[in-house]
Each structure stands twice: as structure tokens, then as C-alpha cells.
Length: 113
Image (cartoon, rainbow, N blue to C red; front, side):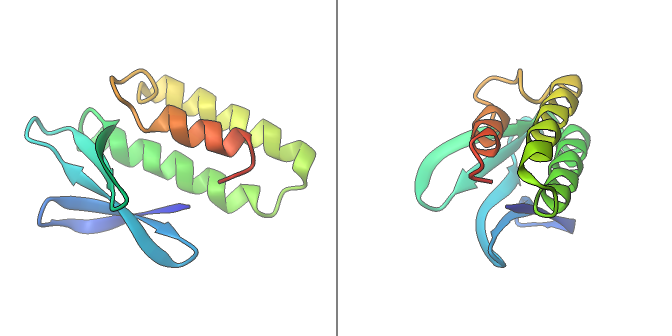
């Protein structure tokens, strides 16, 4: 999974989730300026950032992880996930109410992302 940041918001969408080259979910600006993740197969909204800057930093950390994990042998992948968790924790996104990041981290820990 890659998070494709848009150069400018389009109808409130600031980024798209890309899976295997195809768009999936969207990251949208909420009414309070927070960033919300929505997947077309799920009607729930998950919080991805308290504001755009925090989300962009988290997305950059995630994209860095995804670019590294695919070319890292399995024992090293656990270190990458641990480092990603630490970075997302430091950014504060894992502690947000209804945050999407703990779910993504869990999937990464199990080798699903």
C-alpha cells in the first residue's frame, strides 16, 4: 500500500491509498481540519491526522517504510515495522481517537502490507 499525496486537494481529497497500482481508499479533510481515511468497502471514517501537516508526515513515514520493506529480507522487515511504529508514535498519529494507523501497523506486523 502506498499513500499518494495530491499536490492540491480535489473535492476535499488530499491523498489516495494505492494498492497494486490501483486507487482504493481516500484521505479527506474533515470539517474540523482533521484528515479522515475512507475505504469504498467500509462506511466508517478513520482518523489519519489531526491536521494536514501531521498526516503528510505520517504518510511520508509510511511510504518510506513501503519502499524499503519490499526489498528487505524478512528478519530486517521486523526492524522496519518497529521503526515505523516508533516514528508514527512520535508524530502522535497512533494515539488519535479512531486512528487508522494502529490497524495499518498491525497488518504490517503480520506481513500483510
